[in-house]
Amino acid sequence: MVWKGTKKGLFGGAITAATIFGIYYIVYESSRFSNKGEDKYKLPNRLFERLEANLNSKVEVIRSFSPSSRSKMGYMLALKYYEQQTQATRNFLQWQCLANNFNMTVVEPFLYKSTISFPFSEMARKEHPLRFGDIMNMQSWNEQTASKFNYANVAKWVEFLRDAPRSVIIVCAKYRNPPFIQVPVPGHYYRSGCKKTCFEHFNVSLSFLARHGFKLVNKVCANFAGYAGSVREDSFMRDILGSYKHSEVTVLLNEFRGFYGLYRVPVLSQCGIVHASVNISLKPSSRLIRDVRRYTTAIFKRKGYAAILVRIEKLVLHSRRNVTECAQETLSILSKLKKTRGLRERFLAMDVGRFGSRGSKLHHLKPYGEEFFRLLYGTKWSFEDWERSFSLSSSINPAYVANFQRTIAAHGECLIMVGAGGFQGQARNMYDSYHPELTSRCVYKVCSEPLGDGRSVRSQEPSTQDVASKL
Image (cartoon, one colour):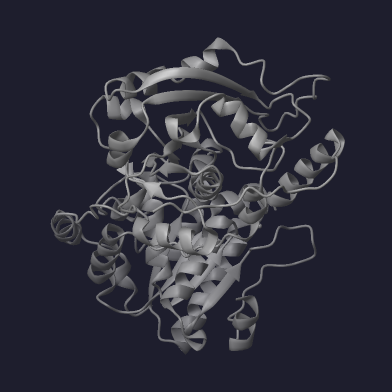
């Protein structure tokens, strides 16, 4: 079965290069700113051992989540989806949309560190990186993207190796890179200006695919770095395919950054517009759910808990909040929940430490996370033990652990979100799906607004009307 899309034009009439450039800049800039019982917080070594033994059980794998039809179709792979997991997932959705418009299929990517990509170097060494399906229920993903948005199917890697056309076209995409804005070159066309080294980045992937019968038939340059204009979606795909039919080739793009924005793809595509309203329910994989149940059962003994989801990178770099103030406000909420709901247990997830985000490591934000942890737990539990507890999931891949933490948080009786960002938004959506009754929801936002706008640290347990108005 093939999910067919449309090829409607996005704009009517002529659009100047300056207008497009201005739109990209505006969109990009706006996108940068979306006591008793407490001794149980310390986990003894025997608990680690018990958890470790439980998590060694065999992981069940879904054998196939793609349609049964094996009709001849072309395939599209982006070797990397830009940014870390939350934004990369959005970019992957846009890639699905683009593929659908040209009746092609996309392939389930892998998790490499905190990115979504195809790590051919690791696969060439016969390593087995985690699949996207290890964190997401791909059967649910395909059903939702097909029924709600009419997107292309996501095929499994083994299906790609078995069914994909053996003729390969590689596309070298060059982008502007923040914080630099390259001045557009008059008369520059995006089909020129790619250096030999850009195409050399495909050597490992091409060598790997050659062992499975694939062969290179064409190279395409997509140099957007100095290009001030825009490209229609159908023209863009014609430039890539050339004289080949979409069903005859496999297309490899070095990196897909999504549509619209100063540092992204300047292609006029309906996929970029639809992207703003795409909100699929991210359903965790069965593997992830099993890990979460084992963890929460062992630590919380089936008792309710308050989940604190902290984004240190957002607090410090983007909102410029005082971490101590935010921690104190969080403690005040926990004290209130202990009195009103009897919640004594707490779960903390942060983007720093051993399994922290790439951004937090790059900017050396771990001391801020350690300070937040110290204020929250005192001396009852060490930061090192807290880090160590997450290594007891069935994988220590940072992307997997991030989803592990988010899913535990979403299962909490109350959710306290400290900071802001897309990761928090996904956690809230997941929390709502596990708490369908509006009256049962207990959600707080702390330090979610940047300083300088006159707002102070705020928290609120919304009423039924408040929650309903935001759904």
